[in-house]
Length: 495
Image (cartoon, rainbow, N blue to C red; front, side, top):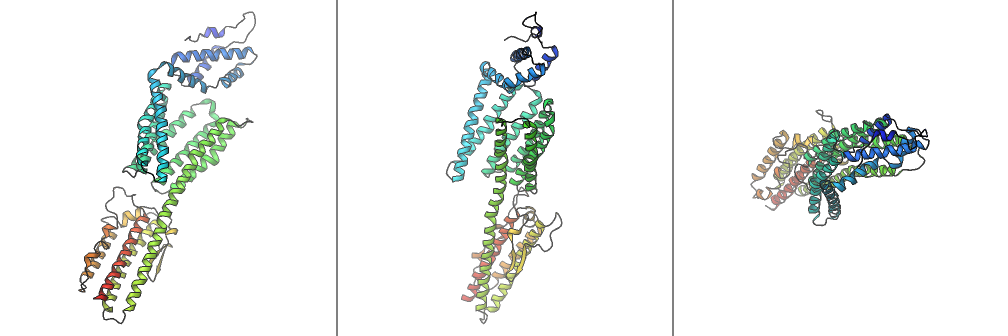
């Protein structure tokens, strides 16, 4: 390959004619611009500079000044093509690079296909979905990502971008693994996704923004780049908060979408193509990119919320209806034997049952009050709770923070005061049943009256159990207490 000879560029084809020629300053500008395209292959760099200088000289000989001639050459050849030339050259002369690139292509296609089929099989509840998902994620995380990082480094050899590449690699591999662990319900999924979010928000997005701000030719777009990075960080953080059911998730997603779609994207479009009369292919790809990134995230956001609501609210309401039905049946059964000699014992049993149900209801009230109030200041008389003749009734669809985890952590975990009171109340109730002296086999109700079967045990993460889960557990316990009362009432009558 020939290297650039500056004196050659200064020569004109015909010394008898006054031809425009490149100055050393012009050559230096062209050299800097091509070097900024991260052309790391030294011999190729010299050849490209030589080629561009010759083309600019030719345009200047056609009567164009240097700025216009240089612009026409860049527009004609497209500076992005320089990177493609380097890739093709490396592919032809470097065996290691060729192997890495082939590995990257094959693993990328194979991993993506496996994930696609895994998603289809998962949706259809077909077998082997988990196996394909696991294999696809492993291929992408441990084969595609490292080979892609190697290819990028081979093409650039730029220490300025090492943080960008490393952060992108970390964010990508932990995102893939975190998604796999989350879907497969494996432990530490939240921690892995947190690492991915940190790598993306704190390192990758800021580093990418800084690299874009170093382009002096696009100085007018710097505010848009900064705005896009802020919106993207909010959006990514909001999605992670939503997956983990943390507070402020909806606020972060909403602000991120508004910044990206309502402000940054229209602004970028205006300053980029305000003088163009035709739609460029790049614009189409940007639109597709927004659709691929933003709308699936919004759908995930809505789907998470709707799926939890559909899974919890109807079930909670059904449990309350069951509670009311058993309560009414027990009360009617008791009224039928008002004139019976056993009525006094039956009345005492009903009073004991009502006291235990009231204790459980008080815990539910405290949990709802904490979720509806401010940190450290529970709400007074939450509107979601009403008192009826049958006891406490909760309007679950009115809960503002149905997946708030603190109430379970503060009232239901082992060692909590409320849980100790509940266990004491349940033991007192079981002892009362054992002392009725009516031949009732209390042992057959042992499981129904065991709080440990309903309430959460020791948890490693305070955010693992939501408010709705805790309320559901207590509602099941109340229904079990009423079921035991129904069985004991009938045993008393038969005796």
